[in-house]
Each structure stands twice: as C-alpha cells, then as structure tokens.
Image (cartoon, rainbow, N blue to C red; front, side):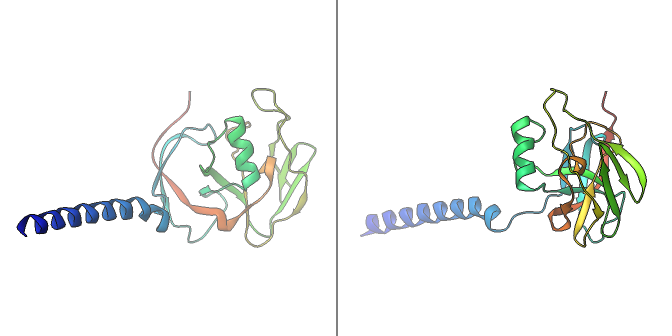
Length: 178
C-alpha cells in the first residue's frame, strides 16, 4: 500500500513537472513578449544596442523598429539583407499627409530632394523601386536611412503600415561602422 502511494506520488510529480515544462515553452507563443533591447549590425544606423520603447507618438526623425511587409521580408531574407521575421530598424522620413515622390531614382519629400535609389545592391542584383508620387495616408510611415545610400528601405518598397511599428528605438551604446 505504501509502495503504491509512493509510485502514485512519483508519477504525479513527474506529470506536474512535464506540465510545467510544456506551459513554460508555450507561454512565449501565447503572450508574445515585447522587444525591449535590440542589436543593430546593419549600416543603416550606427551599430550597437538600442532600447525599444512603446510607440506612443510617431514623429519624423524617430528611429523605429518595424516589421516589413511579408513580400519585402521574404526578399530581404533571400538576399541576406535581414533574416526572416527580424524587424527593420530605420528612421521615419515622412508621415501621413506628407508628399513623397520618386521621380526616376530621386526621392523627394514635400518637394525637397532627400535621397537617391540605387539600381542594384552591392552584389549587382537589381533592386525593386517604389515608383509613386503621393501623399502618405493616415496610418503609413516612410522609412529612410539617409546615412547609407545602400540602405534597403522605403525607397525600394514604399510606405509601411504604422501598425507594424513595434516601438521607438533609443540608442543605448552605439559606434560608427568602419
């Protein structure tokens, strides 16, 4: 009788341990934790560590962490720009009601030339080109790195939904890329 009770308690303890382990593994899928600190290794911004804060208000000049559209993410992953499901870290160059125009390869915002789009990446693969001239709609942001002309940003794929912005990035510890 005591041996049976001991076996029952052992099995119950093992079952509880397994249940706790499964729950611990499932929690990140049920309650996705917010990204709090990210590392930037790209040349679009200074390399280093950035703290991500909730995006209460988006402003031109703010550096944001944003999910690219699915087709853009797939292209970036195929070409080795960014692993799949890794968000972009880019400055906001324009918001709703601002006029964004790509004429030829010259990008202007509200009539001011701000960047040029390259025809190909560093491996000579042709780059897509966002070829529109329009006011951004409510809920759109235009992401653009002016510090690196080879940055893969909105000049190639267009505006991103503001709902895809995961937060605003504040530099914690950064350094210039060589």
